Length: 117
Image 1: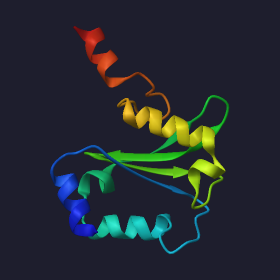
Image 2: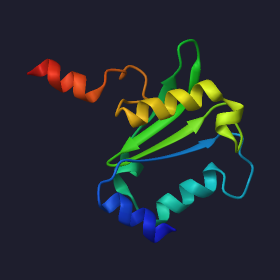
Image 3: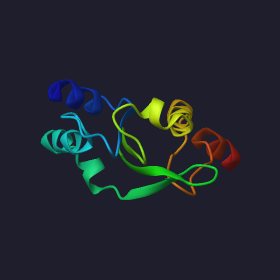
């Protein structure tokens, strides 16, 4: 799987990996982060971790670098959409519409570019 991840990231394809912070399974967030360190994806390793806010409370944290976005979902285990459906919907909506999950960066990238013209 690491070879495929490295290939996808090398191609610059937007990729998001998410995990619940209470995921105690063998494929939990610590295992995934270890795997990402193995592919040595420097843009992510150098990026700061930022707060991801919902309308009333934090949904978790996000770290984005290059083509990769890694999301930690608060108060969730392995089944993020079941444990935190509002956060899961917000996360997918923002990713699919190329909008940042980081606090204070809620303006769609395309809209910001159009506004500068």
